[in-house]
Length: 469
Image (cartoon, rainbow, N blue to C red; front, top):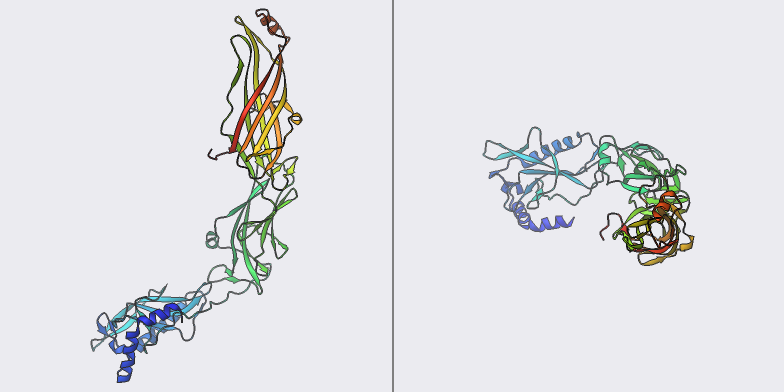
């Protein structure tokens, strides 16, 4: 007997003692003292027998297979003051697909008899419902025997599927699944829907169970391709169970497989890296995940000025730093283990000129040399050789970068949350030998043949887009 049953029995010692006393005294039994709405009861044994028959008939007419033990029946719920509750309790039983033993309840109705007692009956169409025993009463039969509330009943088994059989899930079953989880790779995002391993699927009136010695695993896969990525290679999702590939259905379904299905994994291969996820939990169990994050500066560079724009040499300049991290990049492939590829665009503009007594000469013939560059990821310096970095004019169609661009691809610690960049660039500038410049030079005095300056990018900190600084 369950702990609940033992507790109920302790609460009803008074009833048990009264029953024993009545039997010893030769009275008609425990029901002689029971009252329903203040009235004594008439022919309790016959009433319960009729109601038990009605209950069994109702449960087996639901269109769902049900297991009802031979000794199951209906019980009155009697409180310590001998008052019978207004709800009948019947059971135990278990409908197909039930996860635990079930009990049914229905309201009782009293019919007046000639001797001022009442006969307990059910309504013509009883309002049966699944329920539990009243904790303030004891469920007993006409002999005073207490119901075994701890009795367990195995539900009927659904007919087994054949290994390899694919059963589309009902809409209600799909809606009962957890929120889909995502498997992201370079060229696509996969949404995985699953209820994990289930004992049966389908409507309650026509279910299908797991195959003999096998399991039913549920899965649905939706693929959303990414834009602006290489068209080759192309990824696809693969389901593996027991070391064997299983063809994925086009719609969310249950698949009958050998074994218990606990080792089912969804995998996606791209460019030699296979990401494997436990089907039931969505946890990564093999390969490295794909990630791509944009970073933005929290202290964007401002325009700077060297010299005096009204007299003599002057250089005004502005930098722009943009970039992000990714575990895969075109041309480089997957970053080394424990690393992400840090992609940075470092671009700048400069205006160099000489002013004298209201005259101005632009120094537009410029050459640049990156003389220093320091990059860190979460405080760890990322090795980079400034002399190996190419400076190039902004590409056609690039309306974001400044006029001269350095594109960097560095290996940085994976999952970094803060990137810093600092740099210096040497400029050597001379006037262009064109008609306009030659004309302007006629109105100035003392302009040098060339102007050299070092422009400085004071350390800029970048964090993932949307992160709080």
